[in-house]
Image (cartoon, rainbow, N blue to C red; front, side, top):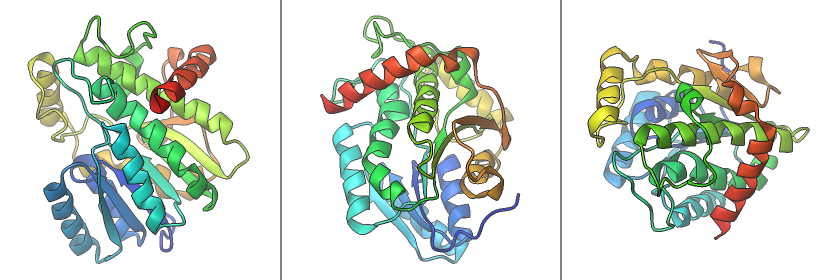
Length: 283
């Protein structure tokens, strides 16, 4: 994979203390970028930061501690970043999460919906001015082929009536695609591109806290899945390849543009979801 020289580029990677996020941050650092990690757990984040600096030979690896399931901490993370950096060339919304049982955050939002979708929605919005000051810039959303099983239930977005982890996950990943396509349209002509990707079945610790059937799926992924390094390849392709300069509003798998589900191209649902999301992050 041909990669651009990333020296002088500032890259922000969420959920980078382990798995695909850490592999992504490590390779960007190796390519010479200034890498800012957003991690929920301080001990894990600091350990990953030390490891990435040593493995890459790059001291420009910064760390922001924030639990992105809480919107106040999304705002804190954005503020911490913009206080220190005036440029952002690559934003990678990689962090995600899921709970076996229905759980809401202090904002009253279902955990997977906010962590996988609303947090990236808000974080990106808060960093748009910095991205605009850094064009050409790239926004990359780590989605999932699981989006194809999802639908947006506007009558029960937070899963209060009937919660299923698989349904919550699929809905959040479909929402991420609607968001990718809508934002790409809104940013046409600005020099900022927005794309989403499926990383493949990857052996990570994503499912460690789950129980029941979704835990089984996670264990299956860990058995048959590829390494986090291989799982990070499409993210890195979108972050660094000259081939996708100017490409926006697309979905990628195995470093190739591919169609997402038919449902994901519904512009009416997409625009309604954007409006609802704006209200949710401001409430």
